Amino acid sequence: MRKIAIVILLLILVQSARAHNPQVSTVSIIQSENNKWSVFITAPLYTCQLAIQENYPSLKIDSINVFETQKLILNLVKDNFIINGDNNVKLINDKIQLAHETTIYFDIISNKANFRPSEISFSAFSKLTNHFTLLKMVPNKGKEITYILNSDNQFAYPKITSQDMSASATLSLNKYFDIISRIGIRYILIAGAAFIFFYILFKRKLLYKKIQKSIPKKSDYIREFTYSITTILIFGIIILNIMGNPNIRPYTKIYDDIQERGWLYYFAAFPVMMFIHDTYFYWTHRMMHHKTLFNTFHLVHHKSTNPSPWAAYAFHPLEAIVENGIFIIFAFSFPLHKSHTPIFFLFSIIYNIYGHLGWELYPRGFNKSFIGKWINTSVCHNQHHKYFKGNYSLYFLFWDRIMGTLRDDYDMTYDEVKNR
Image (cartoon, rainbow, N blue to C red; front, side):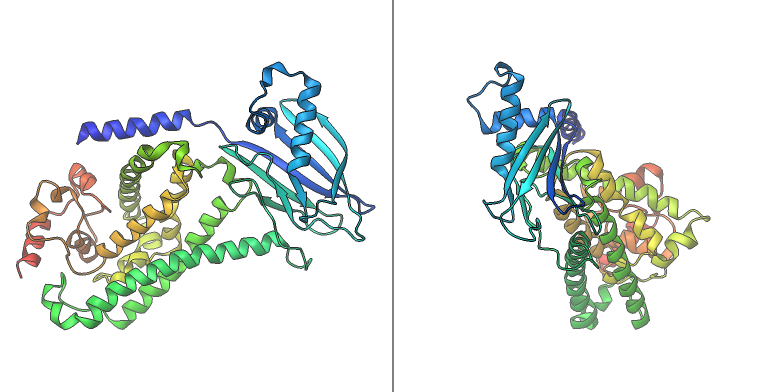
């Protein structure tokens, strides 16, 4: 097992080392004082050369001179820059300066009165990997609006109808509601299903198997659910400010195409994510149990001395920030496909809800089996809530066993619960 883990970790590190720093281009659409519009593009020369190779595969970039390179770049931009879906909108008076950071300039003309750019499509760099394009709208009056183009570098945004709320603010708000809806619906469905099954439908029939035979009060459920909603709102803010911020998103390690690193890397990343999260959770959890931090950060969660499924996200806002810190680590530590984190955190919340369930789902003797003695269980985490000391792990018992923080009565309690 140790050799396999080392091989997987080395694979992750090698692939991470191979990843290039992200290439970032900026497209600015600027309105002058006389209401004329122009386009100003800055892009790394390396990005322009790759785009030429991608769009003109028969050409050898090293064999063409500066003049031809300039012409190819200008044609590439003109052919792939569409405004308002109208082919009659033209780019004229082109200027270009080749340098490490290449600059390109156009004026925009239209035969329509009161012309205003409202929908932009720019696909010149659409096939390039590890590349991001920022789109900036700079009107003569009103706020500057910045967007990050999607994975294929094409973007069309709704026409701006109100100066009171910019389109970027509207999109950010919509994105925020989308994020918290996904997290919230997932949490409510899974925790709610567990709650209805164990605490409502089969409560009496299964009560003798409950780890702590008493049932929490209704006020406990309300407190847990209320703090869980607060946690979801905080998670959404953190995720939005990383994934939706054009000044941050390009510098994350998140990539879009699975083929970029292959399926072996894709599946190998999950166990590494589990180990990193388990390590992060154990040490931040122990830190929050320090007497100087406990009351401020962690007391809210420990008010659930007999936890229910709704306790899984019942954190003080400060603890919620700490808990979501693992997302920040994932985003910047090593390359992850955009589907890695939603899949991983779906598994994480399922296991977290199981840990707070109040019933043990693993079979009799699992705690002493070759694999089971390294796996965290609902009994193990329930003891942590009951006694406030020991059993700090999340998925595994590796750190608890190494650091001597696994409770001495864990095996006895597990056996007693499963032998009822």
